[in-house]
Image (cartoon, rainbow, N blue to C red; front, top):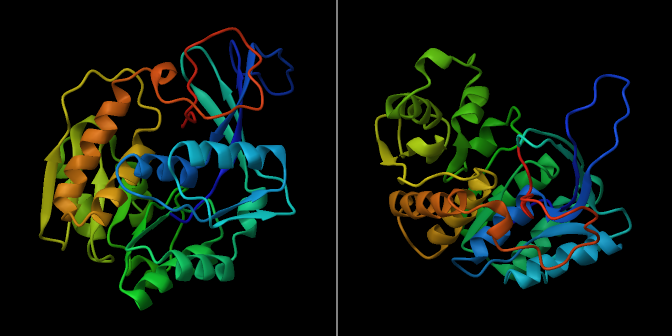
Length: 310
């Protein structure tokens, strides 16, 4: 796993402030987050996982390392740097809506030479990364997999335009339907964004640019494609969703872990689909908590140790 690690500063509010308004918060939590960290802990539930990233020489960095190690993630290739650990500042209202501002900080110090050295040492069969770290470091990870016969998975979040040579290595490119639409340059079409045929169309078009692709579609499941005319839809698992927070990162981590174990893309996607379904059927307060916290200054609530996502 090559990716980001953040300390999430979560403030609970009765409502979001209006422009220029000051409100008193109702509660505060400091918890482990970042897409790379979240996906690494998900992967470690299924297969040995090494995390490659940067955190600061600060108390926040200590917390994130403790969290990763408690989750069974190998942290030997986490680099401590002289910059503050990444932060995400999150406002959450009682109805579950949230706003998020991310500061990369130490994550931007994850340079290509660090990535290459760590991968040379760890020698993974599968490398999963995201876009909360410098793009040049994502490209370094992709290049390493090409030169060493490993498999490169990319979850392009936050979504952005990507070079064709990077897309060409993705096996698979892992996106939700919204990210797929953005990468294809389409305008969102709510009228047609229902059912497996919609995800299959997106997957087929993306398959023209990548080795393989997996397009997740929430409760409707996931569609994988090896070529524009070779799409396979895997139905969603019938569970009662209690909270969908963290489902995407759980899917990504489980997919990478199952591919590392030698399963086919279709089998891995099915297993990842089930892992994500288990997560959403459990209230956030009852999921595996972070190993440590820098502070929890609020009355007991149902707020999750997982990171809220918009």
